[in-house]
Length: 169
Image 1: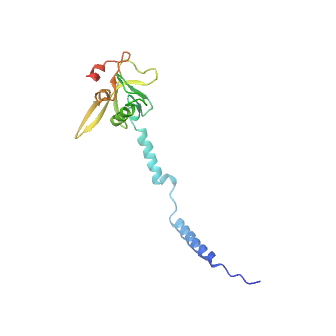
Image 2: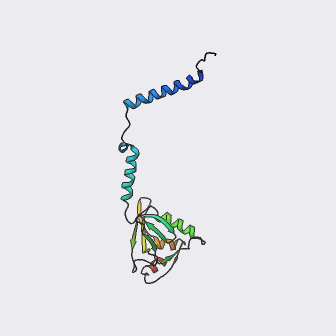
Image 3: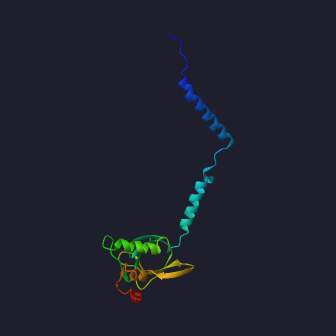
């Protein structure tokens, strides 16, 4: 039987693996891994959770359509005295996008008229938002702005009509 010589290819694979293992082991001994609580990622997540929990109750997190939106605590708000096209109808997506540009990811000031909620459980409110114009902040009456810009029309429904004339004018 012929004598077997070690295959050179095995050495070309084993030597780099042995070197890599040795370096990794030495680094592990001299620089032990941090505990998970000290990793920067954990700190960032904790800060994000703290920031989320500090949102005010009147912070807009989602716009549903041109006259309805959702607040941080999941309350849905229906803007009163206006009616925007229902999703899927002509102008509905433009109305939604315009309302998003006004209030999404911002705090709004809400005002109740007579009714608290509608038959769908949505809060019935007038809304204002602060916007920056140059060096000044200006409060915009959202209901009125939707009508003024042509994305909604005045719609009197029930007894909640105290500001309808202001919105119309």
